[in-house]
Image (cartoon, rainbow, N blue to C red):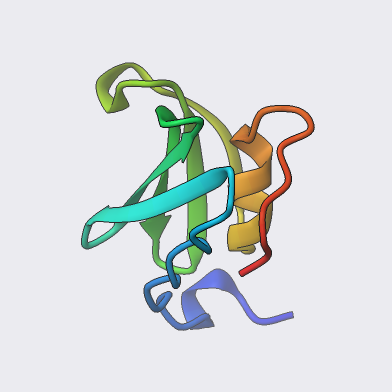
Length: 88
């Protein structure tokens, strides 16, 4: 397994489908805001090849809950129970 330093940086993720109850938007070069039901539920920071997931409505108070190499896993980790969303 290659080390994380050998993994290429991430490319921007495509936006969520219009009918998805869980949506994300790229709000900075290395940050996504994740929303459900029109409310912010968390953020995903891109650090090299790793997605760092933060749960919370405000970035300055959000709490790290997961680090993963998979964007879909990142989104699901802060999605409300039962919320279905399209895979990336």
